[in-house]
Amino acid sequence: MGLNAIFSELALTTGDHIKSQTLFSDYYLGYGFFGGLKALTTDTMYAVKVTGSAALIVSGTPVALPKSVTFNSGWNFLPCPYQTSRPLVDSVPTFTYTTGSQLKSQMEFAEYYEGFGFYGTLTNLQPGLGYKLKVSVGGPATFKA
Image (cartoon, rainbow, N blue to C red; front, top):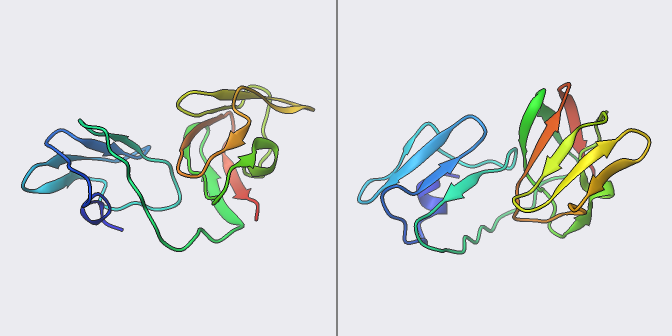
C-alpha cells in the first residue's frame, strides 16, 4: 500500500521521515512522500519519525502464516506478523541461530545462547512493533503459524 494512503489520516509536516532497512522517503507538505520507499509490506519493520505525536492505525487482512523471510548476515529489520503478543520462544522465526545473535526492540533486547535460546529483557513479540535482529550467517527463516 502506498505511503500517502497509509499516512493520510496523520497531520504530517515537512521533514517527517520513514525508512526500511534499505530505503527511505521524506514527507513534504503539499506534495506528500518523496524518496525510494514507495509502499509498505509485511516483510520488514519500518522506522517512522514524525514531528508531532500520532497514532497510526492500519487495518487489513492478517498476514498468512507460516511466513517465510530471508535473513542477511548482520542486522535485519524484522516485523511482527502476529495479531497478538507471543512469547519469544514461540514467535521468533525458525532459524539456526548462533551464540551472539541479538534481537532488539526500541526498549528491550535478548541475546541467543546455544543450547538455551534467547535470554534478556525482550520476552515477547508484540503486534505493531518492529525489531532488529543480528545474525552471523544469513539464510531462510520462517515465522510459525
